[in-house]
Image (cartoon, rainbow, N blue to C red; front, top):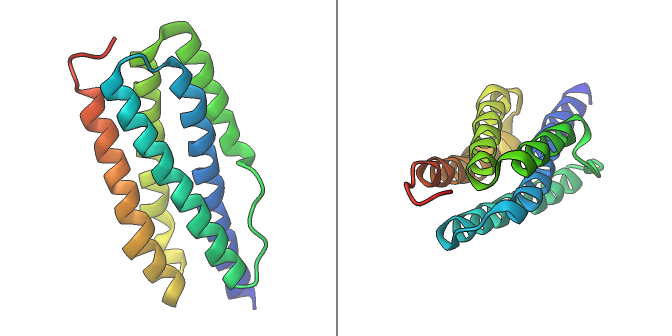
Length: 147
């Protein structure tokens, strides 16, 4: 039973990170001015929203209670907002990429805490999706048309 509780906590940690990402993207999107950046940021936001739903479903399937909010990760959203307010679109995108780096590290660091179906779920669904979102933001950050 302790193992199940530990797995639920790991999945909830991933969920809090994804909720924080959604909050961060929503805040930062207010500072995105160029069409290409807006399109990419919205796509990444939707990817994170899908991961939130997938994690909630998995946690409930395992008999757990999904986290309701971002917890300590929510602080990151507030930092992004403050930086974007001061420095605009380019800084907002830089901060989003930093968040993507952090999310990728979290998944890679903690995936092996999971076993069986939960590990497979993270390795085959969440981690590839996170890598794709990270790659989109990295490419966007290098786009010379950003303000």
